[in-house]
Image 1 (cartoon, rainbow over the protein chains, first blue to last red):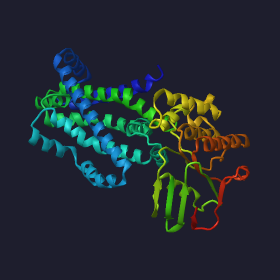
Image 2: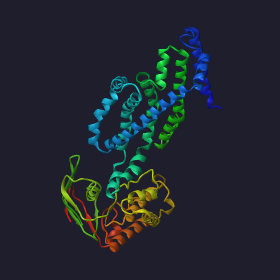
Image 3: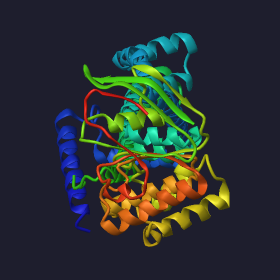
Image 4: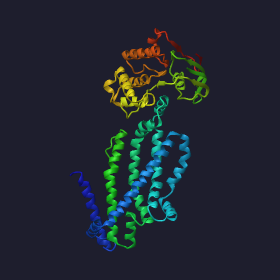
Length: 251
Length: 203
């Protein structure tokens, strides 16, 4: 119960602030919490909301799995070879410096609206940090272990299974927790501009129709899902990663 | 046979090995001794093929090599038995690997530590685990860098017995570098004292 107090306090503070905004700005611009929650309840009972949530979740999961796969392959290769690392780094830095809005614009022109835009934008945005996490953690593994494996002729799949993957595991968990947190937001932004379905698209249509209770309901869904991922997945992952690195995670 | 011909090696513009030639045949037991920094470990690592010489050639005709590196690296996230399994994975298959691992862990006094990770073991135990992996691989060439480091007199003697047995019974060629050579003097093995740097020898 004690653990719930900060949560209840924060929610109470937010609802009070929301109430003040409704009072000062009017229900046309800021619908009251009651009005918003009743709209949200209606949405929860309909099929459209669940369909849009499922689409966004599917896109997010597909994008993050693809990103992880690509980052693991290229990151391990780069971490094992300085030459590969120096050859790939400028390209990945360029990718990192490219703002998502540029990808969204280009992909909308090239692929039209649909799942391609949010999935590709998430991959382009999350691949660079995950790549560097993997490459740097592989490069930091004890080179004497690789020497030992070379002497005994240990096969590549055993190197991957027993040396590389367990060695980078704590760093990968840290990187993955960051990627999961960002994935959600990037997917919504990409859907807002480049898709007719999904949570981001729901936000877009509420904005177009100036349906403020619905817009606020989508906001609650987005924030709620984000918080669920943060508290249910990201924080436990980070704690595990920190514990594995031998650092006492009290934060 | 292992043949190193006119090997030279520099580290940060400091010449460690000047001109070293060395031959090791089946059944040979060679020990190099000398002060720290003279190039013993570098020579051993060149012999193991994990350090590339600046000049010279390395010819190796042995098919199964085992090597104890100076600080005996082990997978920190794996248990003693899993470490053995990893190291021996390409050499011995399936059930025999498991039996061999258990046999050598027991011989090295590590039967109680078979399911412990290196961090839960003392320096001496980690060293014995690395030695167990060397012996279990049934090598025809065994390279040992300071095999007696971190070990008490009892384990030094036991490991020396195993080294001699492996050399005499199985004909394993052994090349070791060590500071502790007292117990080796009576064994009639080739001990090469190294003094001058950069090292230039032809054995």
